[in-house]
Length: 380
Image (tube, rainbow, N blue to C red):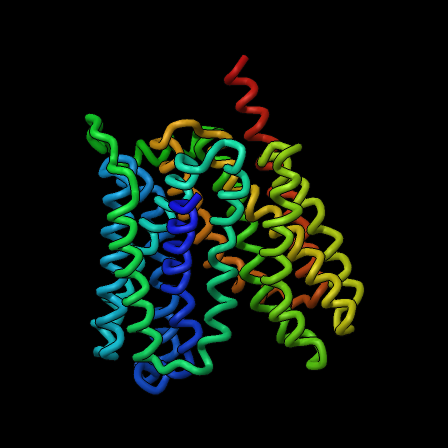
């Protein structure tokens, strides 16, 4: 399990590629704000855009070049980009460094779950995949504690040192990539179509897209709408509740339920949380209760979604392709969820947000039900 922990640490570094800019956003405005708010926002979002466009392609490439080579190169590239960013370069160079960082991030989040599923003993695989799923929440919690005390130069250089140290450790400890002939990539569009047509390769990603659409938006929108007396509690507590429930109750339930079934139950459990938010909107204690309930439920969805990758796909190549699809559709949900739900909240109020979120939970359940039925038909 030491290698699993090291790969999880690589995931922390990948999440920090988003988090370091989010934490420094107001500070960076003094340097890059003259380019406009959209340009400044692009410094944050372009990393996710790379995953949105090339997520599935990355899964195909990782399967071709080997996960060990891919993650070591990605960590090294990420370290170099953070070191460059510490110089606070001109805006075009900063944006170019973030694009390269997007490719680095994408490779790490594809390789991480793929290698963990291979390296973890079967009995501990659900725990290992759930641990991997926590990397974003843990990183943002740590950065929230570090951020107020860090300078941009210190944070960028610290991240660079962390990434290069992990690159060296993983290069020395990960097993070598298997030497086997690989088929040419061929028609990428055709291979994308094959992935999304497969009920095994695409199911984890389709369920996960609904999660990222909801969870990132909720973390962004709820704290400002919560009465000030409870605002800090809901902002800090929601990600912690999600992580804690995922690593405890979620792992325990995976011993008795399939990962796919647990994703569906997690979405079903989140619906009462959104109903409570609707009923108690503006009441601090009620919003905290609803926020914590839906965070706990979506934490189960998060862990079980990653556990479904090896459950549904047995070969490293298929797991890499499924993880690439998860990265792609996960970024789609992250990119679209907050603006869509923010617009609904602004135009039609809390009832519209709650109804839309409840409907999306139902979509997550239905997508997995349809894919499960398709897998059964293929098996017959």
